[in-house]
Length: 291
Ligand code: NAP
Image (cartoon, rainbow, N blue to C red):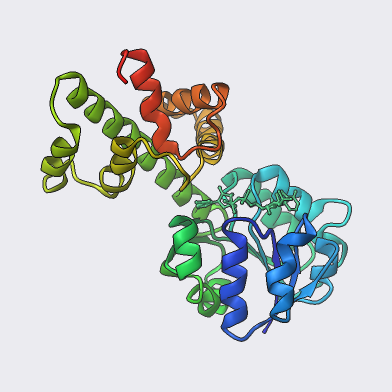
């Protein structure tokens, strides 16, 4: 199949490589040309704009940073809309606003182009090993058409509902992860300040109801004071901004997610945006005089 891939960062590049390894022809666009090198060496065609990708590929994947970036890739001066034709499919795998996603799907539909929103969870390791969880919004027929390609990228692939539903699922994912990181950080800080070995507390908790993937992975990072990302504070802050903006529009109270968002804001302000979001524990430590 003739595929396009736009956005070749931490996540996008290994995902594009997996599609290439599955035997598909690739047209790629990276804002920094160097990000295309590995793929081009393996036979992909480097394109100087998203529009050039749209001129060639049947299905075009996008994996950029934020809502405005996806809007630029699709609607911008050298964006996909310049060259898209009826029958092509755009699959946005970035984590962006569900409301903006529905708007973009409508815009693309005016050109006879179908869109899927398909944000992922599972991080860089999941992208490299093709074990991502993929949450998909859009038409069932389009989902079934693209599913074999998703299977080259991930393991747990769920068609959640219509346009935007994948982004809603991803927002839910980010609420649970952020609030759980906050809870784990509070528990381990409590253990430390009580003069108890926090590593043993974690061991004890892992087997019961308090055990979770976040307790396992982020809890370990907190104990080791090792905040190499992983998932960066900067991106988690962006995701909770999307959650809280949408909650504002919908009139929903999300007090726990709001608290976690404030702690991520504080980390950004203290220059910790490039650390793993397990660094939320640092805010509690500073506030309570814990080393
Ligand atoms: P990243 O390493 O910062 O990569 C983003 C890529 O998109 C960069 O190569 C960037 O180009 C490109 N880009 C951004 N804006 C663009 C624009 N307007 N036009 C063209 N290219 C643009 O980020 P990432 O970690 O791969 O994350 C990508 C998406 O996946 C985000 O929405 C993130 O929230 C989501 N996600 C990430 C993880 C994770 O663990 N990292 C997990 C799940 C989901 P430059 O190289 O020029 O900056």
